[in-house]
Amino acid sequence: MMKKYKCIVVKSQTYAKKAEKILTYNGISAFVLHCKAGSVSGCGRCVKVEEKDVARSVDILKAEGVILTGEIYDLP
Image 1: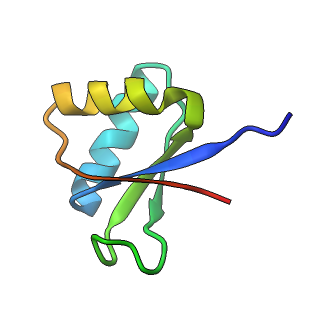
Image 2 (image 1 turned 180 degrees about the vertical axis):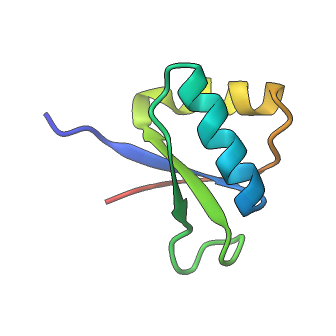
């Protein structure tokens, strides 16, 4: 079965890199991407994680002070 991925949108490139580092440290595979066209937040950044890790990732990032836009979307 293919893995499904989601993108957690963050406020800036700086927060995206911080999020990637924090999640990797916590054992979650994460990668910074540009947000998809038509994203509510415009041309921001997002962090790609496996669908199964979304809730845990959001909890960790909020606890670490990473500013999220609240937008999470599916990746093809």
